[in-house]
Length: 105
Image 1 (tube, rainbow, N blue to C red):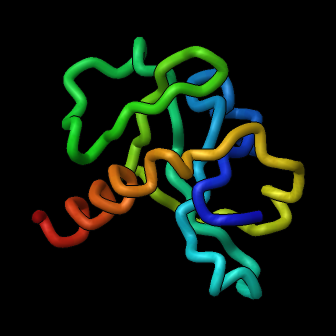
Image 2: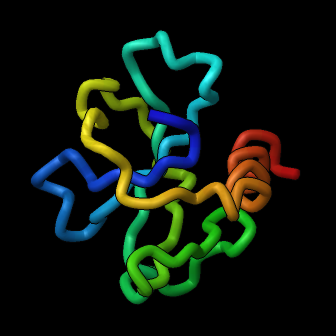
């Protein structure tokens, strides 16, 4: 597991609407038993998002919105499967979105 890895959503009840989560937690804290993640939902389901708060990234050829305002901690064991993709190319936008949520700037 590593920061900005994209995983299949481990929660079956929400997987239909939110197929992926992106890990946000710094690798330095990998010994913790939880991981901070943000849901990734198909952009077609979310109109009127705030671009600075909700960056859009492509996964498997489809645009997905990072729902930064829905960040949550998941048990690390739920993200044990290999990641399906990486959001590393969007690092700057993702960190800016988290900063915007926390500080408003």
